[in-house]
Length: 298
Length: 275
Image (cartoon, rainbow over all chains, first blue to last red):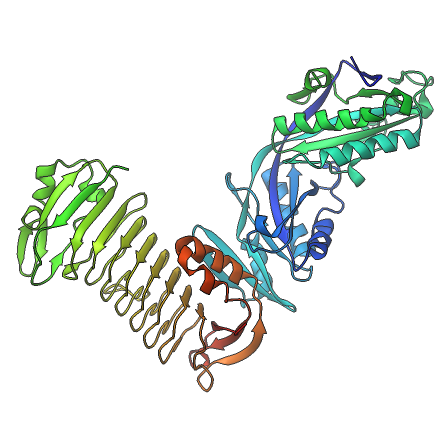
């Protein structure tokens, strides 16, 4: 299978079940909502060492937020409810509560509740105020610029983490350009995030290492500088590989993101230096979700 | 939607206790059984069928009371989630007493003690509401603990007395001592508010759309603010009473008075600033 001259390998991305939630962060204006969201989602590229994977899902208009202010929708993924709870408390407490004019709301209506304002309210030292409107409870915590408003809880949902595809190009600049095109297209898809810097990862990993303390190490078969030295998975002529990792609230959302991302990356075509599209998997033995590239792109 | 309709046949001269008449209590009873339900009428026990025409679906969770009068007391008492009562006309004392859920809509006025000891649900009154709305039920220490009482007209005196949680909102005026000894919860008054608002309040919020005399009492002015939670409150009220939208939109910047200091309280009275 080829798209615009770019070879699509007959392979699949292997993904894993995760737990996820959505937060809605609002502020006086979009700039400050993004400051809070960027801080919250900082150092959240991979569960390998960050505890969670998180990123901005999309920008929200005043009409889309609970308090009628500009906002940002953020998705957080972790391996367990316990870890997600811990990450929420630390990240919202240190990054959103601290950000001027911010407010924080749950963005998912069904599922088990995870504490949000329920625990952060104690920062109010007894001066916090509870407000229950309908079925939802909010906490008003006095802070130096007024009040930090936070919904009592958000909801956790079953999700999928680790969807991915690889862009194999002749050189670094071409791989980067194709990745940027893919990410731009994928950011229009709802319910997914690409948690790595700029949505792109250059250090694809494999499970394990020759060093016993490391849980993961470089995926040497996809490193072009090792081509010919190891059992490389790269065809001749590949000078750079970039990976786009996708976490989604549902498998169909990852399907859609994969489809639009690969099509956008292939827009550069073979003439633009894009040689092939592949995907990372572990032989299908570890993750229950398999995203078959050719089937998705049909 | 299927419904069961009770039409009042005559005007009772004195109190007719409707607390036994809720959708949950009537569910799955046949019409003769419903007509035989006993109601307290003064000192006597009377059959429901003596006073009401009964027709409609006996499996309905929605009950309609037609031609209702102020002598019908305790309408909707103990109403539960998933059920509703629509009242065409007025209601008497203790409407929605200890209500736990569901929706009680009244097209006319409601008497004193509406929503006493309420635990959940919505009481929506198109007209006026008597004194002590949302206060403690007889024998209780605290007032309503959840739910909402929304009044299109005026609220009587001592609305929300000792309320613990929930919302009381009035499109018209509120009588004296609104929110007195309030423990928590929210009260919104879009009209004028009588004297002694928030007296003895410990916590909770009273939002006033019009200026009110708080200065000189045990309340401290903390400043003028645009509080982040107000848009949420406004949005919630707009869902309950869409016709209030133009007036609710004026609740932007507020003066925040905190008290009642005489009671060691941290309650707040928020008074809208004129735009």
